[in-house]
Amino acid sequence: MPPVPSNIELTSVHPPSNKLKVLRVFNVLTILLNFFSNSYSMVFSRPNVGEISNKNPTYFTPSLIFVGIFWFILYILQFGFAFYAQFSNIHIVQSVVENGVSWWFSLSNLFLCGWLFFWIRENFIVSEIFVLLILISTSMAHNWLMTKYTPNHLPSSVANKIVKSTHIPFAMFSAFSWLSLFHNGFVAFAPGYEHDEYANIAVVLAWFLAIIGICWCITGVFSHGKRDGVFSFTIAWALLGVAIHQRETKNLSITCNILALAEFIIIFIVWNRHGGNSLELLRAGIGSRPTRSRIANSRNDIREPLLPQNREEIFIDH
Image (cartoon, rainbow, N blue to C red; front, side, top):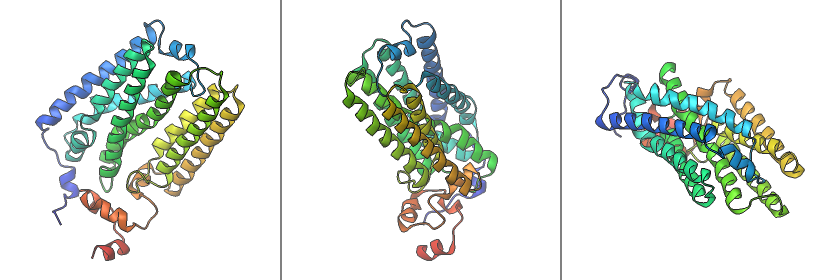
């Protein structure tokens, strides 16, 4: 078995590699490009992003207020990553940025700019392609962070920096990208309220979103047993946004409200089970007893030995 980095080694101070220096520059430049492009499309573009959404109503259009609140919070977290967290000289944080986030942050920002360019021009089929690219890039980074860089026995200050500046924004962006994919898809291929079957499709997609959110919260099926309540909360927020905007379509609105409420309750139960500690929820995985598959999948995880190991796990390893 290869030597395992100690807690001291993981939290030691290292100079940045050349790759990390390049990543830092691109991360800063692309988030600024993303932010100012989005701001321009909201303030100066005519019609702006919201007006185009209102001009092309669908059964999966969310409340613009809910969308605005989401982006306000996400930009704060993303700026925290780009201008603060990624410049840390702590070894494990550098590894998160260089190997976990890697180029995905910059790519997702560029893809968002591409989406804005075609959305403003009302070329919704091409903009749907860019939403798909955003979903892929954010999901890749999110899954990598969850499976390889879950904070374990790191000092709280370091663990909090990793969680707040990397896990949370990527979880939020990845989850919200699902809503964007379905909304843009409806605008491109199923616009308007003339066809009742579109409402039925929206209900099915709402259930699909809810199932994904619940799976991330209670099973960790996508990430070797490591759960993510932030992803689930964002899905619930998205469903609530759809429910509010689709009040005239009673069946869809009620379904989205119930699914969102169910997710909020599940998130609270899971969070409360772990003592109201978000870090403990991320560290714990599924239950207290590790399965053979989780142990096998964790052998390539350089942090896994930092996890508390119970007697059953030690017995299986031997």
